[in-house]
Image (cartoon, rainbow, N blue to C red):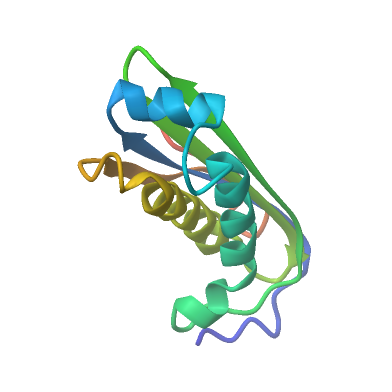
Length: 146
């Protein structure tokens, strides 16, 4: 684990995403709440928040952080058959929250898959990536095109 003892605490934020590609009918069922397991997006939101908080338990060498906020947003594109999940994680700490944001997005995407796999096993989870981050010694960073 990297020693962050001498680093200053600063406000830090990271935004990550994942995209799920699925049948249009599956996405429509999610949108109107007609999935047998229940409220897909609500459960995925909870899973993402819990995953962000548990990142040090899941990813070796990640520091436990005092997370001050986690938000997840969902963008449904019925025409394209895609669901874009964005996670935004904030802290005031000595190291960044990029891994927490990525873990939140991934867990939310996996939760969606789990809840609808009975009707659409062909869902693809793709484009898991960091979109932007701020805070810390290296300052702000933004993915090109994001």
